Amino acid sequence: MSANASPGGTTAATTGTRTLTFLGPGDPDHLDPDSGYHLRPGQVLRVLSRQLFAVPVVADVAERDQVFVPVPDVAEAVPTQDNGGLSADLLTCVVRLRPGVLWDTEPPREVTAHDFVRGLARMTDPGHAGDVARFFTDTVRDVRAADDRTLVFHLHHPANDLVNLLSTGYATALPEPHEGERSAGPYRVAHRTDDAVVLERNPVWRPETDPVRRAEADRIVVRRHGPRADPAWPFGIVTWNGAATDEHCPGYTLNPYLVLNLRAGGALSDLRVRQAIGYAVDKVAVRDIFAALPGVTAVPAHSMVPPGALGYSKYNPYPTPGDRGDPEKSRALLAEAGFPNGLRLAMLVRDSPLHRSVFDACDAALARAGIALEPKYLSTPAFYAELMSDETGHWELAAPGWTPDWHGNNNRSVMVQLLRGAGNYGGYENPRLDALIGRALGAVSLPRAALLWHQANIMAMTDLPVIPVVAFACRCCAARTGATGRWP
Image (cartoon, rainbow, N blue to C red):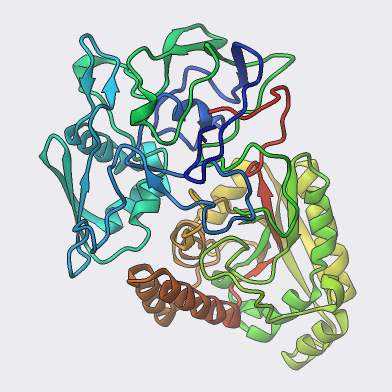
């Protein structure tokens, strides 16, 4: 989030105002660092909390070697084998903390390795950290403080995304319980009401100990409602420059995609039927629905690895003319599978104008191929409850979206989730793919990992348990809504 001098030397501009106002969906007093799923203006949390690593702001999102690449925050360095931070077997990781990072206690005290052990212990609770809790416990066997400035992680298996995981807002240092709510960032809570939280400068924060954040406003006001607001986006902001072009915007997610309920059996158990659905979809029609939303960049999606993720390539195993669908090819596949007269499928639909529009676009496209969709409209909670049920369910298709917890080297939070994690709504299983994913997560080098993720992508798209429809990017480049410069 920070609006800082980035490692490349970009300096944040001032806004000419002494008060920065954020609108915070949800309760403005919900300032738990492990609550990033619930508080959208994660920028607020980032000016209060510190992590071992952080994703810096960059001047140009086209600089792919800098975007979403974590840098040291409270850590002195990113651990490698060359600097002694990683053991030869890649199962032990040692992180040294920089001195001089202070809590605003009385008297001020340094942030220690014990504070991170305390925070990481909370991170293992799914009630606080959601899916990240499982990512962490699947990866880290234990973590201990060797001394006040040294953390030692023991891993279950090598993990080339450990630093990415530790750069999320959930991996936050916590003060001792008796010290209460404290800040180690450039701001601290001055006071709060039912409708607002006011942050003031933290007098013990020192910019020379923080390579990521800056403090330029005298105070930050987080309001539940208000007529004017400055930009306040989620924790992973990478630039305050204007909206990026389609080809340059990083941080895409699959939203929406079609999930196929393989537990339902029937026609969907035939790969040719799944392929017929994939060929029938008019991805441009769905793309246009999302591209019309404010601050959104959307492009047709062709594979499980969206643009900007490690292992992305222009792989498109089911091409159609102009991404508009190929009903003739779809009908031919259906006939080959024994459905020359087409078929009828039940589709779960979130009952909102946006998702009704998505259904209408899918319905029109699939109808041209002889596939009739029967909508089942549900509230959003009921929609996801139905998807997450282990029961077979009375549905064949749904169009959810998936937003990863971080970007860049993030297939643990995208492909793994959609194919064998919490987002595996269709009940897909492939032990060979699971083994390939394990190799990708533990690859020593990122180029090797990228190749393995590409191979996993090919395997998944061959089986086609889900059909990527749109790659959607929002808030990776924040449109200015009141401020005239960049902010921490």
